[in-house]
Image 1 (tube, rainbow, N blue to C red):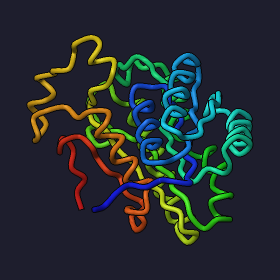
Image 2: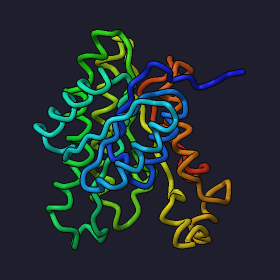
Image 3: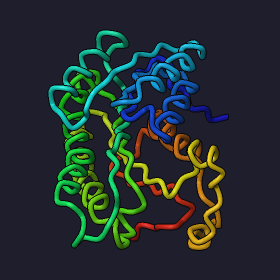
Image 4: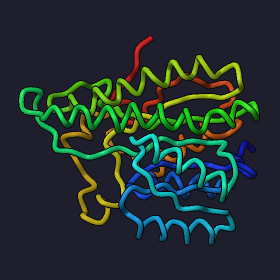
Length: 254
């Protein structure tokens, strides 16, 4: 029987206190990884996650940073190394939020913010965490993208611009560090059911679901399952991939 075994691995999840990030952190821990829990502002949730993960028998550390600032990411890297050791798995999940509107009405600052949140985060995380992976000859970089990068629907422009830029960086990175045994992949969720939807009762979205071949929304756990797979040795020969987890709502062409 195939099993996802991340024992003796250290993983960092950026945006670990977010709706998807918290489930990724729990899932990687359940597979045996020690977890660096990154947060930007939700310190209470970080401590809650820390308690959950240590209760599983895993080591955990809480790290605060603005992942778009080089000095913050450098400080975070040193904290992870000090408390847990060099990271084997990096999940770049953090993303800033803003109000979506049309290209003509979207503030220029929102495009700059999404560039920093999506593109610079991945660049800065690579600069800090990849060198130790190269030394070990193994590692996993997993970026959380979105189905929106393919949809290009009205009001998605700033978000899509950031995520498409991220896609370019990670595809190039996959080719650059592949010779060192390091894989670089992306997971692209659709409109996913998470804690906020369960708590508000807004789980059903008929207008969206009817466009999805599987006729339902995915769950946060289904996203985390793919992240855990890509982090594992089961995915040792997959790199440079953009993996939609959206029930077939977008289908990259060959």
